Image 1: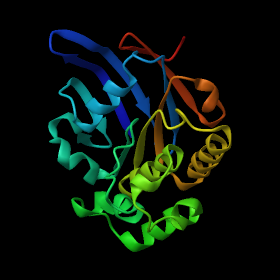
Image 2 (image 1 turned 90 degrees about the vertical axis):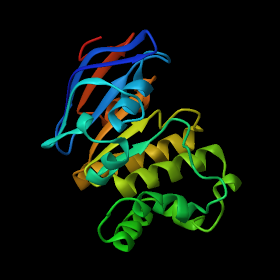
Image 3 (image 1 turned 60 degrees about the horizontal axis):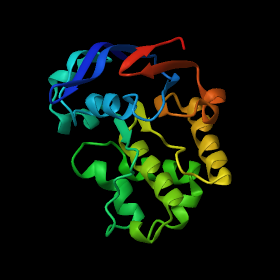
Amino acid sequence: MLKVENLNVSIGPIPIIRNASLQVDEGQMCGLIGRNGAGKTTLLRALMGAIPATGTVQFEHIDLLALPAHRRAAHGIGYMPEDRRLVPEFTVGENILLPTWSTEVADVDTRLEWIFSIMPEVARFKDRRALELSGGQQKMVALARALMAGTRILLLDEPFEGLAPALARRLGEVLANLKTEGVSVLIAESNELHVLDLLARAFYIERGAVSDKR
């Protein structure tokens, strides 16, 4: 599904990601675990094309690094950034539909109904503007938006960060339900306790280097 080999990312003269390799199989939920500043966000942003990178990133049969950033989501990749990046003036529904405005997502209405069926709390405030929501509610909307594009794989950056315990449990339930949907997931988290029960495999990142052992 997703195979990353010898990924390197530098910001200016400073190397941030160093020969990182990992693999997420089809339908598998994997973790990328590391403290703040270890390189988790940089690695995910590199996969999405927000930061230049070298190495090999094979997504199914696609050379992902050869694609411009704006074409990557069209291959079924959903991305939830750490800071949510919702458009504050747009409604929740409009934010969720944003990926469909620039990519050819099939059966948009059917997919939106499915997202609302697994996240009914988001459906309840779909007509509210994003700026009217709490931070936790915005996290749920950002996940729903990632699901709209992520028909094949989700890249989630610190989805549990800053969530109240009740909302964190609810988010965990939503992610657990995705296991039955055949969607692959790579979750970047600083605290593995949030996700350990969900993961088939964990990778650990420290100073930009990735290993499957601590």
